[in-house]
Length: 394
Image 1 (cartoon, helix red, strand yellow):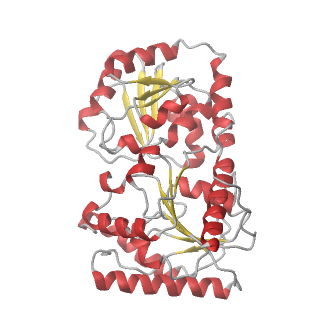
Image 2 (cartoon, helix red, strand yellow):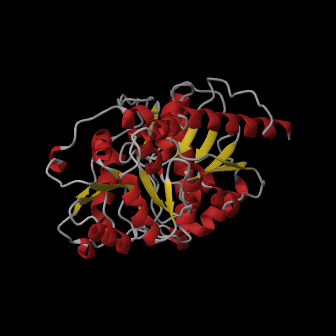
Image 3 (cartoon, rainbow, N blue to C red):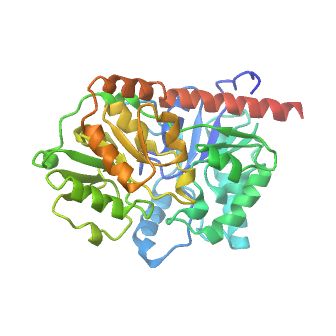
């Protein structure tokens, strides 16, 4: 990519992401660093699936937030970066595949964004970054310097989305944006935009957060060693048979699963399998550092070949050995990660990892340190400057 002058510090970013603070996602990590250099207007999630009865409680909570929480300055504190200057809870309806609803949502979003920037005295055209296909109607209506689709997953294969609703919206988005930024190389092919401009931006890590020693969580203190741990959501992508095989292999130890649960866990009810559920991001390093081995036990399928697992670098930052299924995106770290293409290889790799030399810890942490979120944010700003420059020249 040819050098491009960076966007001026007064250039605002308008970002369609997930609900700020609900989970600390890739885009939230990156825009905590972008917000140190630019004004950032963050729009909370506008919905990626058609609502079900099971969504009623969250829908009510979001409705209350829309009524009670106006656009405002945010003073949230974490141990890195800063939050966006504005976090908006948009008043939209989740049935984006209905034409009239989509039109209503688009008008509401454009009015809200313009009003918020105007009230803040922001006059410079924004740069638009969206990780949400339903935002497609907004592209081109803000007088933006450029637009990027930030693609972290293939929505059409995620169990928490409605592919039949998102597929046509994503196709339209790919036709409209100036470029795509994707966390996996597979996505740079499958989500190639009409412009043909696409960039690979791998996952990063909040290095200090996971490298700074933390005490072992009290609930893990009595777990027998070794502790083979997984810190991530229990989705259909997780290989339950592999987890059971690990349980049998380490019958005297513990298999610890930390993260939100989206599957039936009945098959995993074994004396040495401990399903702890989700834990706060601030507390997560203590759990990861307590693992003797960190695992990523994914089935290889259309979804996971496009996954760059966030937890891999978090394990490395904590300095622990890592064993991972044969994911394409994990192979760039194979000098410090054991890649296991079969169950037998995974079991063998886990045993070998327990006996790994202590001096490998520094190599793991050096790898993580070189892939921090501040570098990823700087790279994204370079990409956006390139996109804006290319548009200016047209």
